Image 1 (tube, helix red, strand yellow):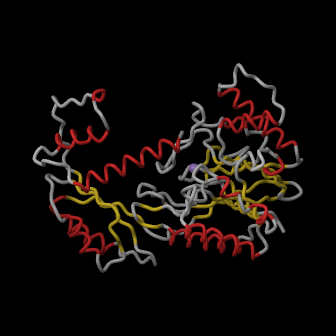
Image 2 (tube, protein in one colour):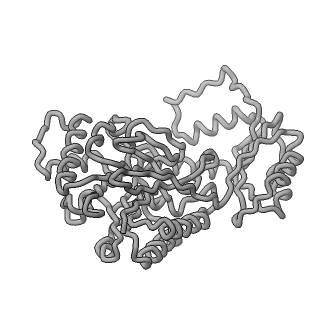
Image 3 (cartoon, helix red, strand yellow):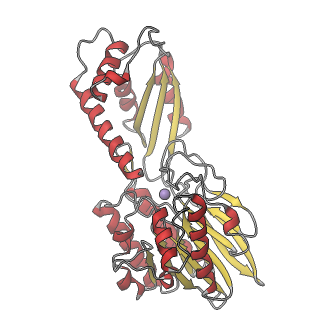
Length: 411
Ligand SMILES: [Mn+2]
């Protein structure tokens, strides 16, 4: 069978948009993917990281993932290679890998295995007689340095903290990997490469002061770089090698309006041919900007023009410019949406930019806590209200906790 590769990434199974589950869309995408593997006669599926949205995903997301693997492996025509991204728990993702290898499913987790070893063979795969795949899952800098030292890089204690030393270590690993087999090479990785455009829904990656990995490290060694992490599909380089972010299969935020796609690779007389296949939209996400005095008419007009014939209800993000605070707007909108195939998911009333009182000065150094600062800020914004409503205070505390968890995660 002729080798034909499909590259996708950033599924983020289990992710929510505000409080709304995306599993229905993710399920439809995975069904579409199975159909595409069949019709396109795909022999190898590459998934470049961020399979799940969180290290401990909800049971329904795990269920969806394993059902997908089961259905695809039953076709018996397509091998599956999946690397861990920064959102995945690499150890959890790859825990069943020995069992799944028997079914031609390869889950590539942390560089350093449970036994504390780095085995280059576990990251290198022969796809056919001519073609090799090298998988570099999301890693932290100290892991690369440790692995390079195991492979015999000269110890350099003086420069160990520098990014130049880290790049030297990474280079050594890549060189050792591609020397293992002769032929053409593909790299799959979950990192920032070259100059990229983010979609805004990605988390930052810490590369010890490096903005991204230099592309020059990979040119002349690889034919194709199958990249994951950035949600907007894009080329980092169009040839020699092609470096491509396939992007996420569904929009993860309202601001992601570009068409989603997967990348398909085949070879014609030894020449690499890439085709971008569009993924259908399984649920429309729409931002509507409405005006203060006419918002219900404008919304009615929108509903008439865009009835949403999709099987799944559309998600709406409504922004309204207001002259002054008004009540019941969101409820009025929900009433109007009641018998339609649209759901209000996010409502943002925008009040005219109240200038902060120039004399208002928050001396952060004397503040006991962030909560106290919020209290003072709130009283300044809404001088008529005596206390912060309990609900707002509760939500502020939850937000604060989320930010703290995120900060810990990024470090
Ligand atoms: Mn990522």
